[in-house]
Amino acid sequence: MITLFWHNSYRYPRRKAAALVKLVEDYSSPQIGGLLGLHGEIMVLEGFSRFQFVSLGRNVVVRMIPKSWIKELNDAGGFALILKYQLYLWTHKELAKDVASKLNLPVDAPRELQDGTMLRFIKWHERNL
Image (cartoon, rainbow, N blue to C red; front, top):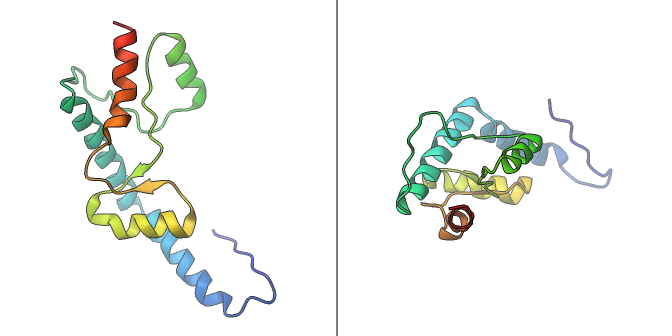
């Protein structure tokens, strides 16, 4: 359920509210959520392989992790690659633009992870060799 508020002097709020609710419904549909998760995993694994790292296990990519687990992981000498943006498929670039501009959420639709994202891991890896 979405509750929207607007100022009394705002004209035609229902039209704007309906468009915003439709965008949230599009953004939060189970199909989009599942697609985003799988796409994010593929992009991260592709990023690692671009730097000659291979995944030796299955189910090793975490999509969401509580901050307390990140701390435990760091304390144990591990690393969590935290992405600033939710990664949409480049074919959904328009939806990503709408979500970013109208909902102020950090989403993007790049074709690949930026090298800077992977360099955070590379630097940690080289320090811990």
